[in-house]
Length: 158
Ligand code: 5CA
Image (tube, rainbow, N blue to C red; front, side):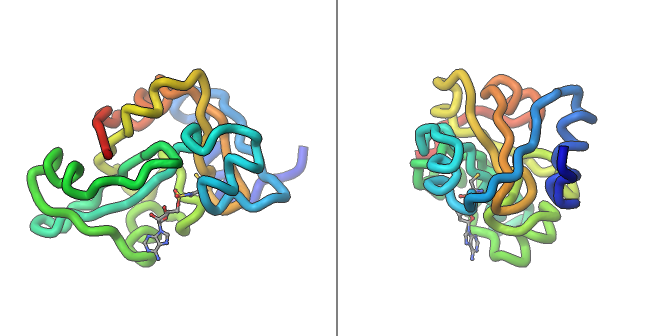
């Protein structure tokens, strides 16, 4: 088996450390966007668990929203869950908070623990796919494992 890039290996290690055996795949095709990721593995865009970082405008606290690939997250809904207005994190914030670059941000294995909200629509699928550290890396998992691994709260995001 070929060696994973270091950022993908970090995700693979984090998966194992959490007690799961999902396998990180590095693909020739780009998986930078949800649409590209879905095309690369042959699933519905809705089965791509995309990781979006926001921050509370009052507390500055980051929050990770893991949304179904076809959804545009309603920031007001997230604000309602958190009890403060939120804004989208910029690329530098994303990197600082997660340790990964946009297009490869995984749901786990971050630089620091992140409060996590999970799109309820991901739970309808048997399997879903998430980014695994860089824009050509993904892993397949179950929605139940996503919830358990992240300790996230399942909410409506649209
Ligand atoms: N690897 C794919 C599928 S999992 C992926 O990571 N897709 S994603 O949608 O989760 O990541 C891209 C997301 O990063 C976009 O949906 C967008 O919310 C966010 N993003 C893209 N560009 C920026 C930017 N310049 N600043 C802040 N966030 C951005």
